[in-house]
Length: 134
Image (cartoon, rainbow, N blue to C red; front, top):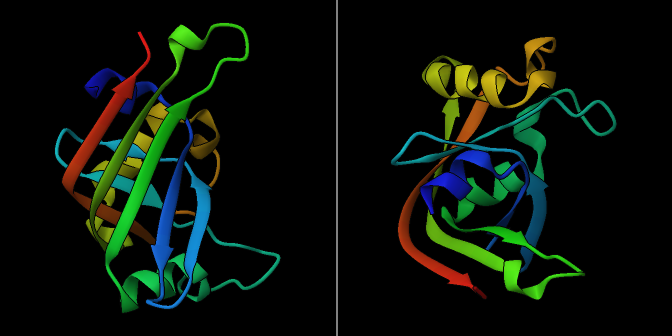
């Protein structure tokens, strides 16, 4: 499981405002204990990362679901998913330093951009479900 958490590039983050679920694809890093998700500046909607629906939802309801999966059209023996249920918190950028360094190492795109260093999401796993078809 740890190798998947270390190498998977995309996951899905589910949040809720207690009324309606909200699901978005995210990039992430795992430090062996927690999952960290950068909160990028979104030029299309607002320059304020705190305006994002996922951030507003976490502030109202910290319970989240985090899903990493693999689907292979040709070889169903390679199918898997890891679902993590946990509590999320929003951290200011200065508290995300190590996570930001790991993001830069994992995703080359983060080596040349700075629009993600304002804040991050930290997930503390409470329940982990792993399924593999092989």
